[in-house]
Image (cartoon, rainbow, N blue to C red; front, top):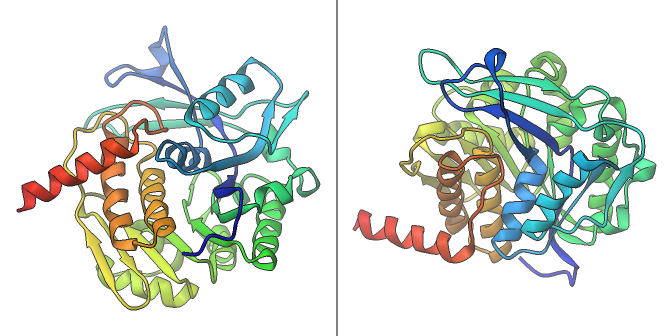
Length: 322
């Protein structure tokens, strides 16, 4: 990929929330303490890319309060540029509560995000020149589901990126608690069409777009439907597939110990984007599944690692395969 002489490798915008969780085996209704961490699909990607050495920026809205500063401090600690953040004197931070569990109970997530600063952000408030001073703009299907203004921001971001010649990465990231498949599918299909990189789980391809079958064929069908240059399909423990229009790449999932599930898909995206930025998609897919395993093995949505550790893990896995 050619460098356009931009300030950032990747920029993104969306909602960063605060996650409050109890340890596995604890119940929220009996909790006397909660673990507090920021998280959000777009900021998860931005922080991980920054830790891997890429200049990144996150744009969005935060309340001018201790809670907003808490989230911002964590992004800054990772090295993410926050010049495009709108600090809101009125408004609130979106929250989500997580109750981790082991079979037979599933992990439960409770959202409390209605009316957040992020959902109230308008296109006129976005620092567009800052956001588009980038090789790539990363968006997700969560943002357009938040509010009418969030959808308008996503649409304008896509239009402005096309006009400026900025490549776009789009993660479908369907959230059933925000909208139903019948409402989400046509909107997401329209937004994701013709992007440079598309991320979608096998489950979302089925329930949103009716694409069934094994991932190795489903990823090609999805790419043809969306007319995307690079399409990545994740399939849980089976790993991930990448189709670039000519070659199909598959990377099995890396064995790990499950500690904290949220954030694995964002870690996969960050790894693939690192490969795309370096001109090696196959390596990017290997990065992605390795980082997804790291996400599952760490507390919090934001993966803490560095490039040397990632390269070391790849070398170890290559040695084991040999």
